[in-house]
Length: 430
Ligand code: AMP
Ligand code: GLY
Image (tube, rainbow, N blue to C red; front, side, top):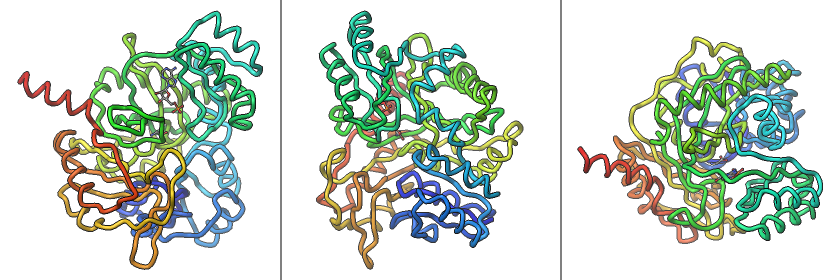
């Protein structure tokens, strides 16, 4: 088969690495890709927002499957356009991608189908939102309805903070994404990222993961796209996985089908594991980044048949096998991230780092310059490792990090701390 992968982050490098290992793949392309992805795929300089250009490339290169990494092209309907042109594509249609593209859409779907989630109300003007917030009292969570590149959620501990968030969003601070707002209850518990492959009718749970969204050690500092992740997530016990499937994912798949927008692709449920069980914080319509990196390391089966089964409605009798090992990834970001960062600094020591046992390095924002690798984004590298425990994977990943010479980068030093604490507690009990 010939496959075209769309995207350019660490998630796409992990997908490229896994796709490249499939005996089913003849030619593998990625647009636009990065310096690491170039090791596994032929890079194509396509503007992926230009659907006609993507379709023309697929026809010229006889592409059998397009794998879409990020949410923006999915919400822009690239799967609809590819399908209309007779090209198979992995990912949801524009209508189904509303699960990520509109928080209000997802909240209403939850309410109508009794899917556990935070209590909420939707607003399209500031006055009514403020009135509701006064009636409920702080803390509250204020969310822009549309895609806001990770900036659309404000956890407000006081009414003054909630008012400021409302004024910012309705004042146009997030553009069109903030024209509608959801105000909801603050959930308490431990977060987990839960992934399921969906084929429109049914769903197959993937391995669980947890990410670290805050920029600094101890889960402090501003929210980011994710500074590290590990799998499995100890909080996702087999019972919690069953409940997440029965109470959240499967009712969503049924509701989407009933609503005429069957969901195909990978569904990423951001969960809060509360005292009452799993509750949905939000959906994303793609793999998590950097959760995908740890999932791909742990996936024993070929990924390609899984993606095809989603596209073809054949998941019912499908299964995937996983390595029992734990996987962990440390994100190395350019100084300043999640704010403005400088591009072009040189990264050295990557070969030596990759020699650490169990280590795999995926590139996120990198660019090749002759033989050199240059930083070219906010999140730049994902240093991943497998190990028998999260603790072992963590030690290996940081051993590799310490071999990388990149003065303009930084990373958290505590990725996986909750799981490692749990492991040492269990060891001391045994
Ligand atoms: P998002 O940018 O939509 O991924 O949300 C960012 C983060 O905000 C989530 O990962 C949670 O940590 C937090 N969050 C969002 N909604 C809630 C909620 N209702 N209760 C508690 N935390 C929340
Ligand atoms: N790791 C969080 C995300 O992919 O949205």
